[in-house]
Length: 368
Image 1 (cartoon, helix red, strand yellow):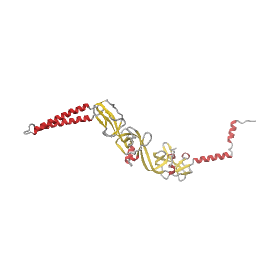
Image 2 (cartoon, rainbow, N blue to C red):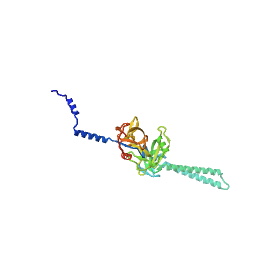
Image 3 (tube, helix red, strand yellow):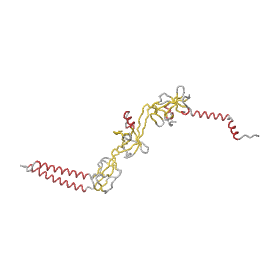
Image 4 (cartoon, rainbow, N blue to C red):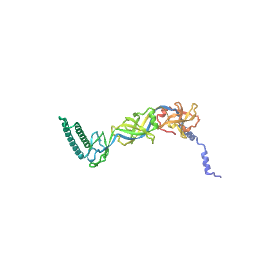
C-alpha cells in the first residue's frame, strides 16, 4: 500500500469545501465587514470659523522701576518688607541725615546774614540824601537770593535722605541691609505697579499687514493663557503696536494690556496670547476626507454619474479636525467622506449621503 506524504494530505484537507453552515457564517461576516466600510459622501459647509493664533508673551508691569538712594550715608531705617504693597508717598527707607542737617543749618545762617546786609543797604539807599547807590542795593539783593537758593538746595539734600514710593506698587527684594553704607544711585529695591499688566509678543510682518488692511484687531479677540494652561479671567483692555519692525527677525512687537485686580500676574511672568479672529462664510470640510500625494491635498469628488474623480484642493487654514478651503471645492460639490482608500479615480460608487451639518457636529478624525 502506497502512503501519501503528510503535506499532501493537509493540502487536500484544506481544499475541501466548507460545510454549508460555515459558508453561510463566512458570507454573513463578509457582508457585515462590507457594511462597516461603506462609502459616505457629503458636501462642504459654509460657516463662520474662529481662527486662533498663539504667541508666546512676556508679561511686564505697567511701571517697574529701581528705587535708588539719592544721597550718600548709612542706611538708618528700612520701613517696608519684601512683597509689601505700598502707596504713593509712603516712606520706604531713611538714610542718616546728620551731615545734611548740619549743612542746612549753615546755609540758613548765611541766608540770615545776607538778609540783614540787604536790609541795611536798602535803608542807606532810602535815606536823604542816599548814602549808597542803587547798584549796591541790587548787589545785596542778589547775594540774598543766592543764599536763599542754597538753603533750598540744602533742604532738598535733607529730603533726599528719605526715600518715598513714587507710585502705588509692590516692593521687591531688598538689596541693602540696615546699617549698610550707601552711595548715591545705589539700588535699594525695585517697585512694581501691577494694577495693569502688559503682555508683549512678536507678530510676523504678514500677520501685521493682514491686521492693518483687514478688519483690524480689537481687544475682545485676545485672551491670555498662563503657564499652568488656565486662562486669565480678565479681558484685554487695549492692544498697541510698536512703531518699528525688528530688522533681524522681521517681526513687530504687539502689547496687550490686562487689568490685574486680583494681583494674580507679576512682573516677569510668561504666558501665551491667543488671538481669535472670525473668518466669515468660510468653506470647511473634514480633514479625514482628504489625502496627500506629493505634498498636495486631494479629495474624491462624486459626479452626477456616481463616478469619483480626484481633485486638487488648496488649504487656507488647518484647524483641529477640519480644513478651511481656499480653492478647489464649491458649496455644491459632493466628495467622499468615509472610504477614501476604497475608491480609485474614475470608479463608479454607491454611497450614502450625509448632511455637512451632521458630519461637522462631532469631528474626531484627522486626514488619512
